[in-house]
Image 1 (cartoon, rainbow, N blue to C red):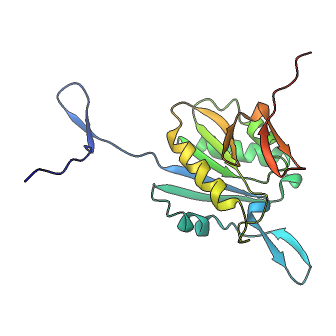
Image 2 (tube, rainbow, N blue to C red):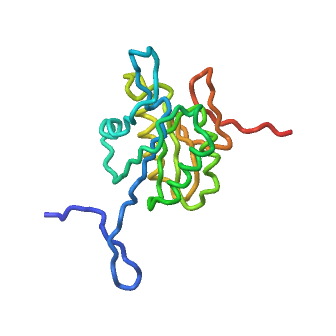
Length: 189
């Protein structure tokens, strides 16, 4: 009988001792946006409601350790510099090194750019073109993609994860006509 193969849960520290390996916990910040919009029948309009992130995480069977902080419930067009400062300070005060932010797509790039000077974290922003509660929403895919990318990043930085693409915020652009984010390199002058 052959013993089963498995990866060790400890690592050699080089001095003959072993140390228990710890999987990084992920901080998930929710900031509102289309991903969290719900239809209010009495008003006949969509408004940002409570975050649906827990439902999405169950749908994708996300198994890594995480903590959710519902920070804002705003349409991204209504976000202010004070809101971005709150996001930044929450990240800087958090013990987690890996952070995913769900955010409205209209100003996601602006928020991502405001975080570029956070030097010691891996930060991925994602959102959706359709509310997470819609059956044809891109929210589940985008969140799953963002979390997968976040866990595979080997060095600190800030990224936008949309439509199966990982984009540097300074080169990202929302193409409203096609309903996607794309890499947009500035033209040389």
